[in-house]
Length: 477
Image (cartoon, rainbow, N blue to C red; front, side):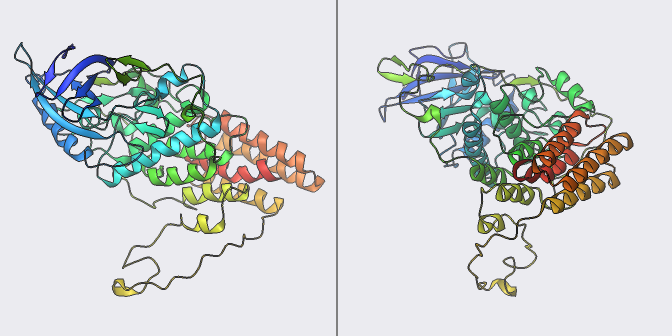
C-alpha cells in the first residue's frame, strides 16, 4: 500500500479511503481542500528507484492527457509526487471522481442488450478518437477502464496505465496492459499505434455483446500462443444485432493493424446503428446500479472488477510477418467502413448523405475535390435520394465476386473454397425458386460455413468481407 487514510498530499488533497486497485496503481478517494470537491487520486505502485523511466513517462503523459477535454474521457486535474515516511517517492494523478458503475462489474451479471452495448462502445470510440487526434494512445482499453455514468460512458486510465505502456523508450521495455484485449502487434517491441486501441475496442464490444472476451487469455504467454494459432473469432451471435455491426467487430479484431478502421470511423458507424434511447445504466433508479457509498459526505464508486493490468517483459518476436506502420487506404476493394455503412443503409439505418460523409478523400492538394491552391471549394447540397435497391440476383453476384476475389488473393484455402462455392450455388438455386425465405436460409447457411473455418482456412479479412456481402441477403431477401 502506498497511501493511507489521513495523508495530506501537498497541503491540498486529503486521502479518505481506497476505492480501487489495479496491476500497477491504487485509486484513492480524496477531498480537494482548496476547491472543496471530491476527487480520485491514482498512485503508481512502482518506486522511483525501481523504475525512473516509468516516472518520467507518467509525468509526460499526464501533461498530454490533461489537455484532452471530451465528454467520454475522465478529466485529469493535477499531477504530483509524494515522498513517504520510508523515503520512497510516489507519483500520483488527481482525476475526476465519477459516479457510476464499472463496465466490468456490470458484465458480471451478463452481457448488455445489444443497443446498449453498441451505444456504450460508440461513446468509448469517440473518446479514443479524441485522444488519438491529440497524439495519445490508451494501450489498456478494457471493460475495467470504462465507467457507466448518468451522462454516458467514460474512459478511465488515460494517465498512468496509458503512458506506462509506451515503447521502446519511457518504460524500460515493459509490456503493460491486459492480455485479453491486447492487439497482436502489442506483443512485440515497437512504437504505440492507435490501431492497437481499436483492436481492444473491438474486444470490449465483443464482450459487452456476448459476456466473454474474444480471446479468453490471462497472461502474455497465453496471448502470444493464441495469436500464433490459425484460429479466428466468429462474429458475435446476438439476436437482433445488425450483421454490419458484427462485421465491424471483426474489422476491429483484424490481425493486421492496417485492416482496422479508425476510432472515429467506429464511433460514427456505431452511432448510426444504435437506437436513440437512453442507456439503461444512465436512467435514474436503475435497479442494476450499485448503491453509492458515502464516506465523510463524499460519494465514491465501488472498486472495479475484472482482469487487472498485467506487467511483464516483451516476448521474443514470433516467427511470422507483421505489417509495419499503419497505412490508411491500403485495402483491396471497397473501403471497410463504406462497406459497413452500405450494409446499414440497405437495412434502412442511414441516408445517402450520411454514407457519403465516410468516403475516403484524396488529400493530394488542398481540400478533396476542391480547386488547387487551397481555394474554397464550391459545395453542392448532398443528394438524399436513395439509389435503386439491388435485386436478390445482384446481391448473390456480389457475394460470389467477393468470394472469388478472396480465393484469388489467397485469403481462402482450396478446401474451404470448394465448400463455400457450393454455398453460393445453393443461393443461386433458391433464386430460381423465387423464394425469399429459402434465399435467406441459404445465405445464413453460407455464413455459418464461413464461421466454421479457422483463420488458416478463411482469413479474418475474408470473413469480414463475406459477412458484409451477405448482410443485405440476411436482412432484406
